Image (cartoon, rainbow, N blue to C red; front, side):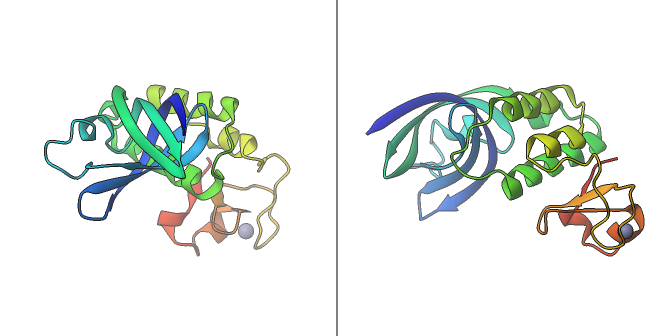
Length: 178
Ligand SMILES: [Zn+2]
């Protein structure tokens, strides 16, 4: 059994069984991990308020087989800071990008700081995120037509697209990179 203390961003919360929850976490120390919250669905769960979608939280994780959250203290409710709908959309795009592209258990301190900074300040630069993730938009061309000016990234195929071609792809699975 091993214990970790780390900051984490809650990417997604889902139910697990009758009483538990399962979290997709992006952590500073461990990178992306899945973790169970035992009893997290109970109304009186003391951890649940600290583990909502898009919160920056200090968590204690125990690894025994999989990860379990044994303690959590919210530090920043990132989503509540988003007063403009466009920032809300950008935050969701960033979470989508992380969920699609960041492998499990591969910590990356530069990406971590960039993600936290963006979520806290609402200063979005998707070209930097993509570069840190290994997909540098500089010099990239549209996967469909070869145009040199790319305006979107399609994580499912890990491809860049120009404005015209991106119109043929499902909007909710595209990340606009400006
Ligand atoms: Zn194109």
